[in-house]
Image (cartoon, rainbow, N blue to C red; front, side, top):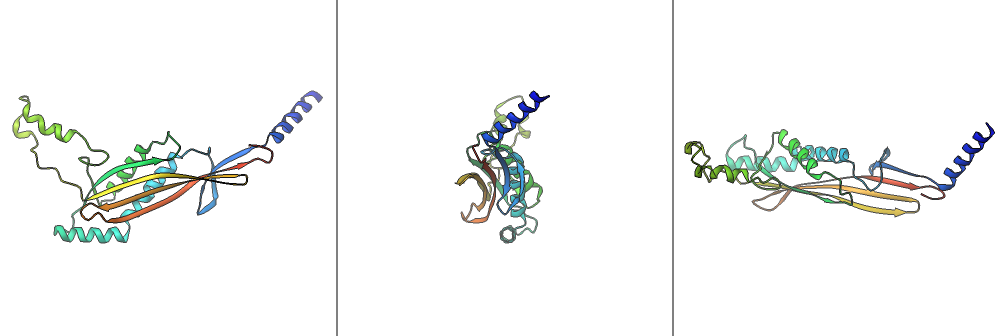
Length: 213
């Protein structure tokens, strides 16, 4: 019994002597809202939340609503929806495991389900060879020519969305803070003007133990 107590006591001293470290996520606007996570990595769930919040922000933006009204006036159609191409969300972080394509797909789904834009696969990040291949089927005698889609039917996008997830590391005293910024922009391809911009910050914080990491 004495040996066991002595062993546990030595183990506790070793842990205290070696110091400890903690990692947590945090919202810079609300630092008290923390959950445990390893520093230097991006939470996929946080990126999904940021993407959905960004899409909802865009679709409820007064600036975007003004563009939408102008677009509908141009088309002389009160129900017209602008076509949007989606560019790659750039992974400007040190986390190679971040599945940025999944974040982009989730963003597209939220935008499409808003009912305020349509998404094209003919241009942008998800540009598909399928459209050209389908029109080349007229050369294949196995297909009825009248069922092959003709050329000059694809619609060019009016809007383009681009973005990135950027990381920045700050060190002060015993704390290491890594902040990630989720940046998105939507531009009018006709004029080149940015009609909406969004930035959401989130990150990790690591606190060094008193006598080590």
